[in-house]
Amino acid sequence: MEELISIRRATAADSEAILACLRAAFAPYEGRYTPGGYEDTVLTPQSLRERLKTMSVFVAVSEGNVIGTIACATSGDEGHLRGMAVDPQWLGKDIAAKLLEAAEDELRKKRCRRITLDTTDPLERARHFYEKRGYRRSGRVTDFFGMPLTEYVKTL
Image 1: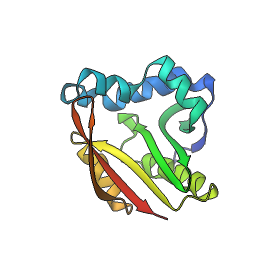
Image 2 (image 1 turned 180 degrees about the vertical axis):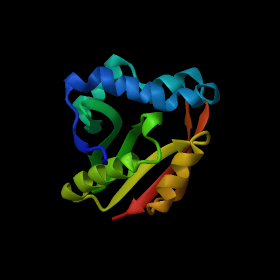
Image 3 (image 1 turned 120 degrees about the vertical axis):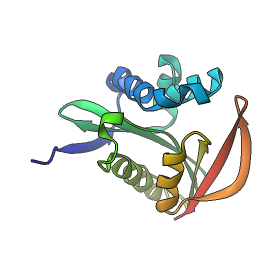
């Protein structure tokens, strides 16, 4: 029997589960992040509260448990993705693809013409995932708490 996965908007009640999901997803990479970069990636209760106010946050849920998350925001006709994470036990089960689809659909509804996201060098699997779905390096690399942060872009 296939497990039922649903994607829905996150609420403040999901906060603890979202933080746990982010920590689980990024724990294998912690040693390759600067302390500030890692905290900004896995969030704190305060930074998550701010994200829930300023961005559309989605969660993937199975049997009532949050197993993935993604956030998106708009600025004019450009959308931006942030904070994609899938619980490691759920990798390879298309959870990330479903989350990405929900975020892209939200940005299309808001009439975005392009979507950007930023990722770090340790996240090779994520870079390949995005590239397979039409995201390309823009050539823009910025400093992320002492780490290179590479921008990807997709035209809608």
